[in-house]
Amino acid sequence: MAINYEKNGQIAIVTMNRPEAMNCLNLEDMKELGRVWLDFKADENLRVAILTGAGEKSFSAGADLVSLVPHFTSGEMHLTAINPTFLKGVECFKPVVAAVNGLCLAAGTEILQYTDIRVAVEEAWFSVSEVVWGLFPAGGSSVNLPRQIPYCWAMELLLIGDKISAEQALKIGLINRVVPRAKLMSTAMDFAERLAANSPIAVRAIKESALRSFDLPIPHAYYLETYLASQVFASEDAKEGAMAFKEKRKPNFKGKKLKSIW
Image (cartoon, rainbow, N blue to C red):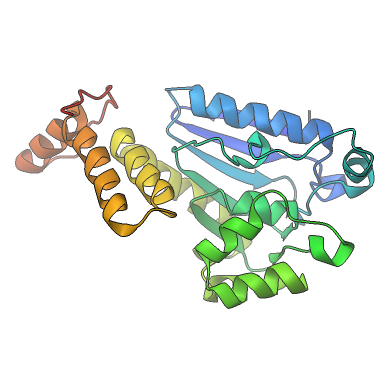
């Protein structure tokens, strides 16, 4: 299988594994990646995932257009608003760290937009190049990019389709860090371990608030934030965090289910 899925304690490592094809995703790969994300979402033992590509050349150079496009142009397959491959519409509020090990093009950059913390090697390149081939970036880029980076940069990437370097991607806020290749996975793992050490209840509620409030008027977003915050404050993790602070020790979060006070 071209998608490797490893569970390492509370951290999942997901690897797109077709280095001979620049980790392009064919139909079976996309289905399998979708199954992996749904399992990650459902597995209560997992708190965070790292997404990367095999080899040293490519994170993912996108979808395998030769094999995939005919399915859509013939009408055999249909686009949908929910696509687990990209975590599109899945509402997974567990954090995902991207370790970009090379080219991150087209569908590769679309998947990237569903990750929360993004680390890239110095040699990485990024693009949303579908428009160059008369296609639409239907993984969510026309919705996500203008919300994640400055509008004018989003539109240049979407409408021109040129590649940008890791340095430029860092400057416009598409990624968090640029590191030497030797430090890529250790940096990504450091982020993942720090995320896993935090209360999963708080982490997921914060991510949910950030994502759900995008299209809400600010007063409504504050109500949503207050509701989610109340769930966190009513949890056992909140009690443990306060006690650990008082006792000057690291908290031991269990992620126990919430006791709603609403």
